[in-house]
Amino acid sequence: MKLTIYKSIQLILLIVSAFGIISCTDFLQEDPKGRLATNAFFTNKGDLDASLNALYAIVADAQYANHHTGTNFTVGDDISTHPASNKQPLREHDQFNVSDNNPWMPYLWERRWRMVKAANFVINNVERTPDVSQAEIASAIAQAKYWRAYAYFYIVTTWGPVPIMLDEEVNYESELNSEQQIYDLIVEDLKYAETNLPIMHTKEPYARGGINIAVGQAAAKATLSYVYMCMAGWPLNKKEYYQLAADKAKEVIDAVNNGTYNYKLLDEYWKVYSWEYNNSNPEVLLGIYYNRDRTANMSTVTDFLQDMKQAGWGDMNGEIKFWKDFPDGPRKEATYFPKIMLADGKLYDWWYDTEPASRAVVAPCFIKSAEGAVRGTEFDYADPSAISYAGEKQHQVIRLAEVYCIYAEAVGRSGQINALAVDVLNKVRNRADGTLSNIYSTSMTPNELAEAGYNEHGWEIAGYCWGGLTSRARNMFRMYRYKDHFEFRKLNPLIEVAPGIYRKEAVPVTGTWNDSKMYIPYPYQDVILNPNLKR
Image (cartoon, rainbow, N blue to C red; front, side):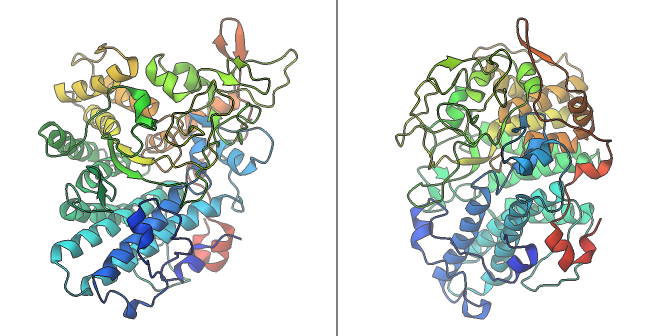
């Protein structure tokens, strides 16, 4: 059975599988020494590097597959799942009815606490490393504080109040800290990170080919901007934080525009998740990198429908209304399969079905995680054999396009509108349309700008559950839009997907809304260990 938070926290570093989790060869070749006692560690520069290697190995493990990260994102209006099969752990999220013994949920819980534990190990001990510059010490602490903030951000937006743990001791009677207290820690950690991280790391494995592999300053600022967005929304509702979010996002945008940060939008949306830019994507402020020779299966077929020729698992598919509302153009074509190939080897529209209906689930299917069977090649949806079952696609934590959308929304929600917000939002939409449409203008109202930023953001990241910072579900969470989606899913109306052809969601939603559905329950094993976790 999966480790609980407390079982996990008893270990100094859980590096059971450090070799074979993260792709950067240098990380793998270093001895992470994850099992050494604290007082026997940090005796030389190699120990400092090994502690960061171990941290990044744990981060990679936490991000590598949908059951380690992202099953809770099926609650969003972009993702649904299979109505039967073995998908109950996913359906419970999709139905707003997660049980405390959901068999996949402990993966989400335990992986985040591993990250906290590994980060604390570095933060609390690295300063005593001899013969290392203060800048190197500060950078190591900053990286660890970033990932601790990232882990706590995932935890607080998924479970709400939890204990704050800042050391290596285990307290089975830890009291819960409030959402405000947890956010205060997250902000404190991210402020330290943005101050002490370099703009660009200068040596491998922290940078490679002009790309930051480890977290850098821009990623910390972008993350802090989004955290402010969430603090402005539910449950804290600190509306004044929209201005803080806008200001922090603008720092990133200004640094990109003046050449301080070496990031830019790719010119075509399909390239964002392409193999061509898998290891050199100039749009990704922070990514997690994998190598199939040294890592576990990256679960690239998760999003495929079960009855497709490429033999998907049928875990996650698109929701129909979101697909219907998604603007046509190159971005939509690169987000969903243009056609699906069924067992007969022929291509069909996703809504194809027999009369009477016979397919188990009929829904749009995401293509972003697909990889070609031959390493280094693009996936071809029309090729029945073109699929890799052991992938190595980069998992993107945050991209520049998302920062543009966050900035535009934050400006609008703070009651303003300006030319920069409109300009960056047009950059996102123009690429999505494949033309210089410039559909947004300063004649918009602040609310129109905010909703445009929110919507563009959703279309940019649709269906992406691989540990991204700003999932559609998380955006809905902060805007308190789960309730509206819950009521819509209960109604489950037929939607016209093509002239005269109607489809509706296969997974039913029932019951009565209450705000407890905003969070998922704590794993029952941990509630037994710590009664304070009872709601």
